[in-house]
Length: 232
Ligand SMILES: Nc1ncnc2c1ncn2[C@@H]1O[C@H](COP(=O)(O)OP(=O)(O)O)[C@@H](O)[C@H]1O
Ligand SMILES: O=c1ccn([C@@H]2O[C@H](COP(=O)(O)OP(=O)(O)O)[C@@H](O)[C@H]2O)c(=O)[nH]1
Image (spheres, rainbow, N blue to C red):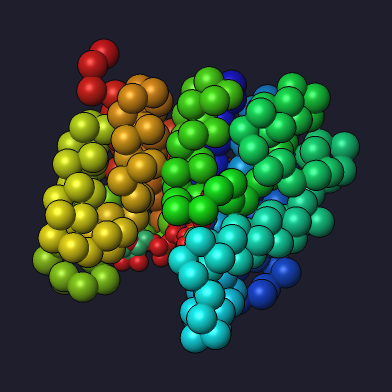
């Protein structure tokens, strides 16, 4: 079984807490021990946002800001690697999908961050899952799934238990056409489109408790949103 897990920066490193990173490493190791080959993609979190904010005020352009974000995601990838059993995980952080796929041939676990400007690690996770023909893709984020409105803004927002990739694309695109790019779903448009075209099974869940990722992958036990291929 090949699984890609996207760990949002907001859940891996909401602050620099080594204990939380160790908990995530334990989950990754338990999944590897259960026979999963794992591609883990790590986000930038508040550190990325702080660096980007500071560099923006210093006059950096958007591409330069994205590169700072990418560097931060790779820093977080290294942090997770520091906690992982070195016999399981590839010791380097791949900078592209080819390297990641190569590492996954050799090792049970590969951990990476961003790849190129103008996207987020949501898209990296989806593209990695597609590239390595993963069986499933898990988004561990700060909200318990995809809702019909931002649950942090609208107390009446309702969670989708299940939706097709096409419905996810529509939901995200609707927000972008309103000019609120990236703010109307926990997954961005590029990621949603890659999920749609690859037909990969994906789930979105609250990763605040790292154990929830383990239960979802090992026992299919989770509260969140299941994203299914458009055509069976
Ligand atoms: N329709 C929606 N369903 C779920 N979350 C949404 C929706 N619209 C916006 N959001 C926002 O998406 C964000 C996803 O998590 P985020 O904090 O960006 O985590 P990550 O670190 O995983 O990228 C949340 O802050 C949530 O408020
Ligand atoms: O392939 C990538 C991955 C990330 N980023 C930049 O790095 C930031 C942090 O990544 P992400 O948003 O995925 O982190 P998270 O939301 O999980 O904290 C993004 O906003 C982008 O600016 C990028 O340009 N390309």
